[in-house]
Length: 43
Image (cartoon, rainbow, N blue to C red; front, side, top):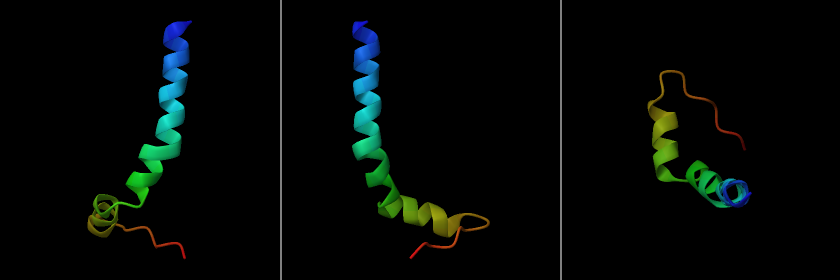
């Protein structure tokens, strides 16, 4: 029970913070630019 609650909490934090922040990061932009078939930017 405790592990399940902790796991759920961590997943929620990642959804709200880590992943969106990564998607806006320079590292992610560089990854897209250097990909063999870059995905067009959404406006």
